[in-house]
Length: 55
Ligand code: HEM
Image: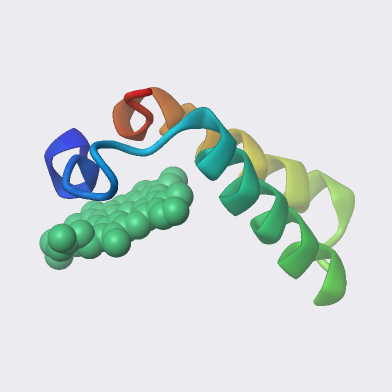
């Protein structure tokens, strides 16, 4: 996962990952996903943060 993302601006930052995370949260809200399922998705997304963020 790090290798896939390491070429993007020298590695993704936490700020960039947060923008992605917030967009996922909004997409789930906009599509009426209930909060239990929404947080299951967000917990999973966040569990991959350390494999993607380098800076
Ligand atoms: C949980 C979050 C994420 C997951 C699971 C994920 C997963 C992946 C995977 C598996 C690939 C490789 C695809 C392939 O080569 O077939 C990839 C590539 C890529 N990801 Fe992500 N990604 C995530 C977040 C992000 C974010 C936040 C960004 C940008 C802000 C991003 C931008 C990209 C780009 C541009 C590529 C293509 C890199 C290249 O081929 O040069 N990803 N991602």
